[in-house]
Image 1: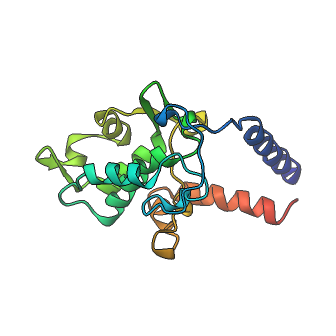
Image 2: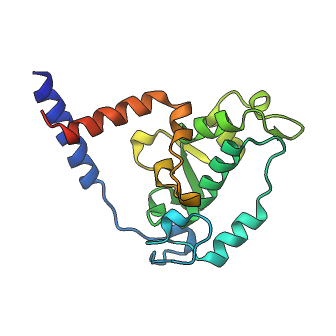
Image 3: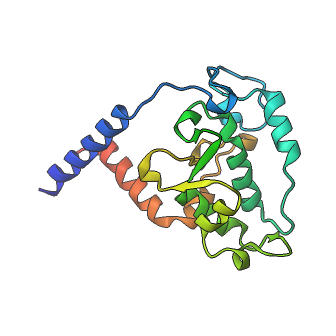
Length: 190
């Protein structure tokens, strides 16, 4: 019985994923089409299909200053967030000049940046949770299940030739378990 339910659930996820596929376009850049950008030095995981060009992402990274006391994980999450302008599927989470960030990403970012200094205080003293932190940055917040928000899968990150997926799992061990179950269903169908 469990095998049957797991198979039905997995099939539903596959159908839902394929049913929600949308045409990719770059809403941040006046709806131009994404294309390969082999010279990206930041956000390199989008080299094969990117909305941003190297000049645009260099300008974006050049304008953002690191928070005092920010951990490497905090800086990494901040960099991931800046890379939303390169995502070829940004039309799903950037609309009418508003960036919709997944609550789960906000929580991970907040957890990584809790000891960083902002406005003379620690981030975790200024804000009670990730949603408050993201909203203070003028982002909209939505749950990842809504399929309308920015969420960076750190497994895509190949900075310095290595994947850095450990950072996400540190803050969200429940996601690790659910991901392992999904992979288990793919590798060992019931």
